[in-house]
Image (cartoon, rainbow, N blue to C red; front, top):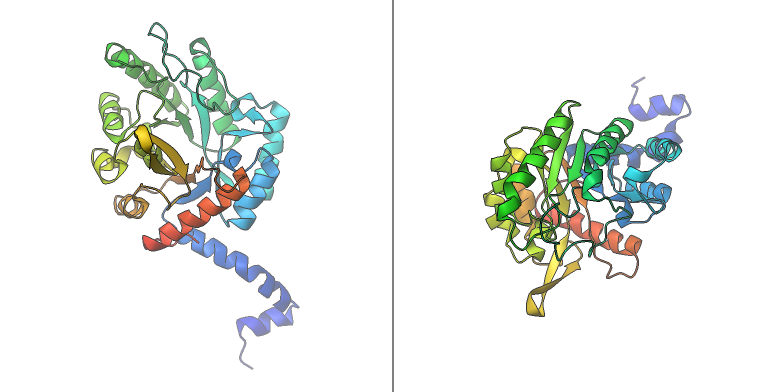
Amino acid sequence: MAFTRRTVLAGFGLAGLHVAITPFIKAEMTASACPFKLAVINDEITQDFEKACQIVSGDFGLGWIELRSMWDKNVTALSAKEVEDARKILEAHRLQVTDIASPLFKTDWPGAPRSSQSESRDQFHADFDASAQDKLLERCISLCKSFNTDRIRCFDYWRLDDQKPYRAAINAKLQQAAERCAKDNIILLLENEMSCNTATGEEAAAVLGAIPNKNFMLNWDPGNSAAIGSTPYPTGYQSLPKDRIGHCHCKDVVNKPDHKYEWAAVGGGIVDWVGQLQALRRDGFRYGLSLETHWRGAGTPEASTRISMDGLKKTLTKAGIACG
């Protein structure tokens, strides 16, 4: 008698189980083929962490998630019990953490004129002044260990009208933080953020050039760059050292009159995401690609993120990249 996979499974009474688990096997095989760690920032969906994880894992079919805030608390403000609860939820949904999306250095630079961007943006349940940053960094390092990740996202202070007199000191502070992270084998990711002092690819390249530490990398956000009026791809991206890009945020933007902008569902704005994704794959990027839609055009964060994730997956397909 010739034995096949189906007859063997049937012999053990597992044929039904085979049918049930096949979609999950296919999902895992597709995810493993994806060159990126496709993820979503959890609070872009909901502050209900368990529901966010269910959607990311069950509905989106992903294995990665980025942590920013949950239960109406910034991740850095979670109690020991809440951290443990979050760990159990992640384990139950078989999700790994790309990075701690902390608010580190998203504050005023001490001694400089107060930035027009100071505290005018959503800080995601975080409000830490300059004197609290060293303590905040230690907290982020501890969270990396708790959530089994090696990356911390940071910024470089609210955007100044003239950052030149302070740039060297800001770089020194970032380098000091990177050196502290290196002691625990942690990578510090500077996000280009339009309300902070590094907003574009060109500005990011300058900072990376000034801070050569290998564990100091860029959280590249083409949407943020586009929002400030720059062209993220190909122009901004071309200036970046490709081996220093350690994470990527995915959002889209539409232009409005008077040099203003609005967020858009991924694939519905001005960012050339097809070209950008193809370039990331070509240049060997293998880290987290996190949906951070910010767009709320569908009425609720969850509904908007679902539409934007669909847009991201369609864009990946257009780019010839298999990610589920």
